[in-house]
Amino acid sequence: MSYIAENLPADKHCFFGSEGGVSGGKYTSLNTNLSSLDSGDNLRRNFEIISGYFKKTPENMFTLRQSVSNIAVEAENPSWFKIAADGAVTTDKNILLGVKTADCAPVLMADYKNGVIGVAHAGWRGAYKGIVENVVKMMLAKGAETKNIAASIGPCMQQASFEVKDDMRQVLLDLSKNNSVYFSAGSDDSHFYFDLSGYVEGKLRNLGIENIDNSRIDTYPLQNGYFSYRRNTHLNLITAPRDYPTQYSCICL
Image 1 (cartoon, rainbow, N blue to C red):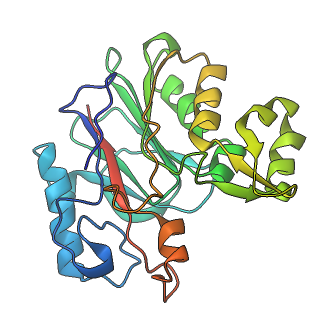
Image 2 (image 1 turned 180 degrees about the vertical axis):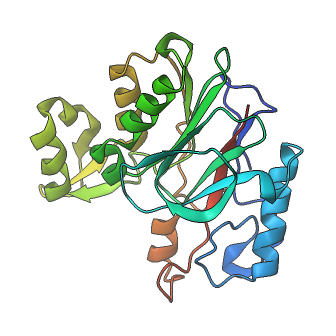
């Protein structure tokens, strides 16, 4: 299944799920992780399916070599998994911006009045480090206005599934005691449930962005139409480093 945000044009963005591709086995079916052991031919076809939704080709895509950084870059020309960053911004109508995820939050942003779009790969570490803020800062530098930015947070691991240890919680509390609102009691005194999409939404609101769509779709549960790194880990499906499927989220002008 795919998710279309209410505050972005349906023909200009899509949070793709796991369905609609050609991969098989544990990669079924719209896998986009080039680091996985999935067939290269399957991956190429999956990206053709994704870009075709926007009447574009993989050669129009700006894809990132993601990690957990706060690095945002300007997409001046299409690029195929060469640039190490976790966010990107463009004003080019021919470029299709995207990020791959498998529990982290994909964030799509746009100021269509001024012709500026941005994407962010926001796991808790990247969000903590400031990837959302850096993408918005770059959008503003390229001519966007805060009042015109629409932001959407796509499917990611939700609070009911995202149990973390107290050391992770303490990192966010050391940054701001206000971050306590994103945690609820876990299975014992040393564990808590973390609201990732709420945390990302809070960051957007702190930046003055009011037009926000939060899908609140959980990637973790079985048979939900989305890939999940944590679910695959718990099912013992990851037998080699980085060998897991990811979904893709895209936006264009």
